[in-house]
Image 1 (spheres, rainbow, N blue to C red):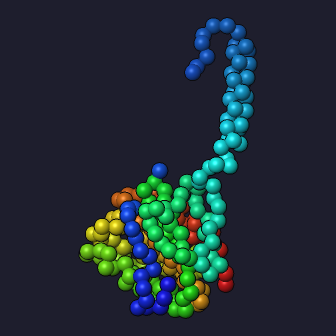
Image 2: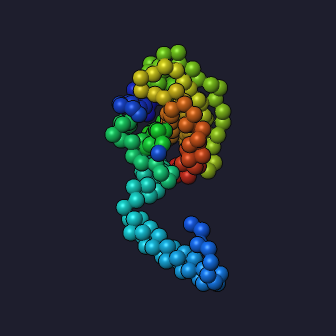
Image 3: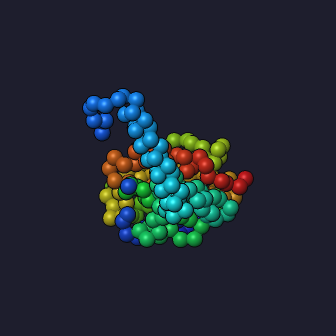
Length: 201
């Protein structure tokens, strides 16, 4: 991630989640139901214990560049095969939504970083459109900016979002792309990953 005029931040390649029978004593029926319920609960807990170590969606923190750490949301898997983002970054996917986080040295402002990112993205689109930016915070209290953008593209979905934040020496970027109607559905996950970022001050 360089100051304005540097190389694009990301290179996108590829694409882009019975009632009881009648009759008999009611108290016996209740005991049978309770016994079945407890048996099923024990079975379910045993399965969960066996499956947990190999769960591909375990929320394992990922170290980016410059000491920045992102924790993927539950259900988000690596998207490295579809979206190559290079060193100091990670790409994830869930339910057709792709997101990438990057952290690199940057000495400009949030406005400078957002301009750089959008300028690097514009060549990938025809009829590139960016909605007015809004303020946000990431990593607890670090000020940032959000912009939604769209346009015709071979690599990007119809709904896209960029979030940037800088500390004065490090720039953090989140880029998300989604099919129509999916971005809003996964927004809570994206917001949670942004909120729980670890960014050294």
